[in-house]
Amino acid sequence: EPEVTQTPSHQVTQMGQEVILRCVPISNHLYFYWYRQILGQKVEFLVSFYNNEISEKSEIFDDQFSVERPDGSNFTLKIRSTKLEDSAMYFCASSLAGGNSYNEQFFGPGTRLTVL
Amino acid sequence: KNQVEQSPQSLIILEGKNCTLQCNYTVSPFSNLRWYKQDTGRGPVSLTIMTFSENTKSNGRYTATLDADTKQSSLHITASQLSDSASYICVVSHNFNKFYFGSGTKLNVKP
Image (cartoon, rainbow over all chains, first blue to last red; front, side, top):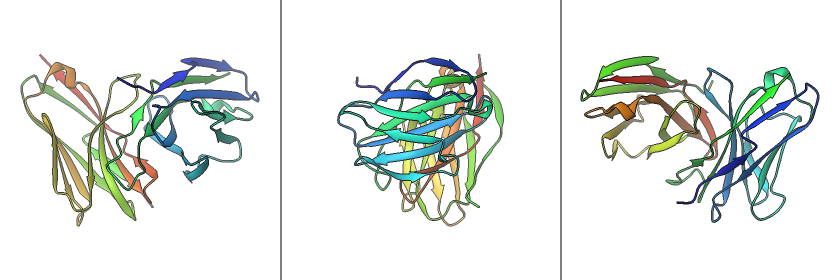
């Protein structure tokens, strides 16, 4: 069964460093998403991406964050200058269609980011 | 303010029993409402998706209801199993591709 994969599973970085989290969505999916979940808190929407551009983003997704689909398979989240409060589990998801349909989103296993 | 509130925060039931989880939302405009199951340390898994015109949707032992007038939804789990122990999250879609998550109900099914 096709699945969303994410690498690395755990990333440790120093405050102020740039990190890139990588995701490989399901191959025929067209919509891609990033979410984060701070330990013990709820999942938070960061950004949705379609047709090589951001379709929606949350207030969390400020200028420190960027997303890219550099080739036909990868979808990346970049954090330019990490802060302690960026420590969280980051989930990537993909769906065949957009939010105005019964588009089931499939989530990856997550990347745990720890900022020291 | 767009919000999704869930209750109870946590719930313990015996294996084989039924339970109902609640979700209230203030998200507008509303696109659809989803219920997810999240095991600890894993990504959420979709259970149901409902648009404003749907009142009920089932997926096996999971039945979700939606009252778009009162902005309330419930998830009913029938004949619970140990494997149902997880967090259940209500998510409301806003403008189709923006999503608001509830804090979840942590369900513990005991033998």
